[in-house]
Image 1 (cartoon, rainbow, N blue to C red):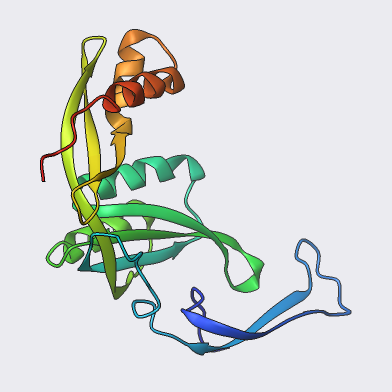
Image 2: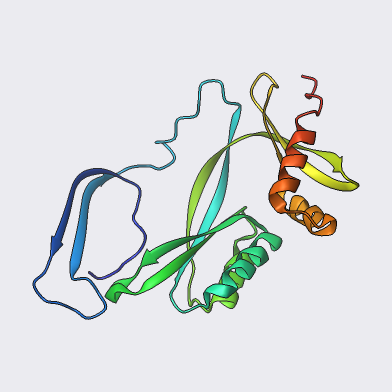
Length: 205
């Protein structure tokens, strides 16, 4: 192969797995082949009929990294989110020669691409960042606030097309900070916050 990368969006038509006769120490001599037709990942998305979803274009940045100390990844994700990434996450992969690695992904708005790309390369040592445009289907979201045992916690409120609340979820960063301050577990604090959030008044449509 002349190049390698993540699996593209496709409609799978055939899958094959084969094993060779040569034993390579530390690496299984196995190959997996997936044959399919390319598809448009955006066109394949079908939102629910009653969903109040808004398409929003964004750029997805990604880089494969095989030599970063795993203990550094939480800080990398935190830095990306604090410097303009709408979302950031990791995917375990296997690179050429069977090397285990990680793909770091960051979703950004137009205008934030340069800063976040530079940050990915700086924090991971990667020599390049791939990019491609994506579209997201987004429910209408607002933020409310609750107070639990003297600590303020933001709550994300999602609504459907009729203005009905379909989900209330406390922001976990606030939950974790309150749990530390109160000396209780994050699970207990999350239960308290969810219970308080369930009593919020629905928005007036």
